[in-house]
Length: 143
Image (cartoon, rainbow, N blue to C red; front, side, top):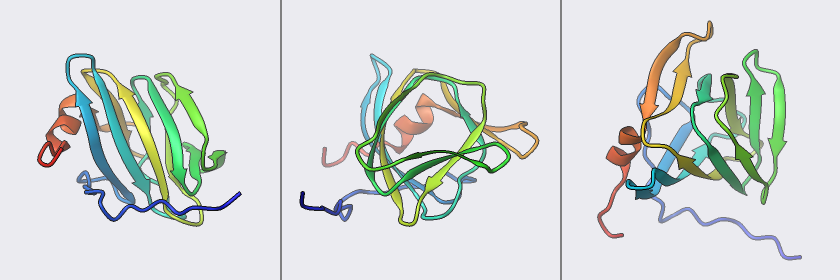
């Protein structure tokens, strides 16, 4: 089977202040049904901020390895290219990142209110990301 590289040249990556090693592009927002399609890029061999998912997420790994880590930094799971995962909301905090190359993941996020909580190393909430935060990053121009 031939191996292909994902071409990200036309993706308009954006960042969220306070979250290093993560870029995102909001591809579609269905405000009425509370569904968003968001492409995320995690830096190679880095971990993003400790966080937890407050709503259902479905993911598809498009490039690299999507790595998940326990709150203490231990590797929890590796999701190679082509992996599809359905993840319900969870109180368990974790970190995410890329493997030996930047990881690109398609997230389908469900919800109209609070979606994620970013945490400090003592698991105190330092930021809540809501659907409106993603809607504000959605660039409807040219779509």
